[in-house]
Length: 143
Image (cartoon, rainbow, N blue to C red; front, side, top):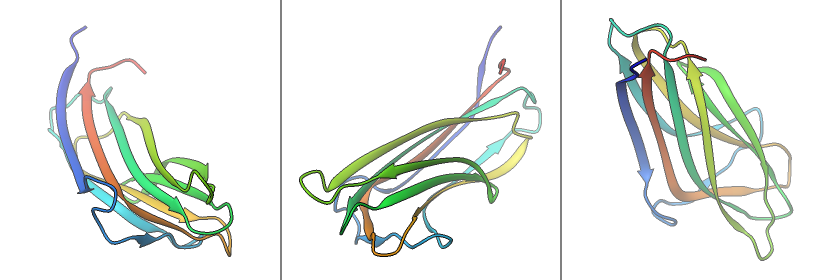
């Protein structure tokens, strides 16, 4: 079976560490939206498709050992989440990589977005870059 590239997009708010002012990570249920990418699947796209999502986030623990949650959304609906514990000693700065897939996405325009939140009080963290979000749509595919 031939698999075609249907669409591609990327959002790169910051290419390097320190490329942006630090973004304080809010406490759940508040979130900080770090990146958004618009992806348009052609109207004749096969329904058995796959959108591969890749994100990179540079983040640092400020105090204590924060737990952060990263979420990916399609059109405001959560489709993926990952929890990461951070230390604030020798390994204060982390570059987190998220990879997932979204299956059977309907044709048309979609907004993929990436957010972060910290799970508890007195566990501050900050995003300082890099920040990237990319989406590649393929089809037809088997799940």
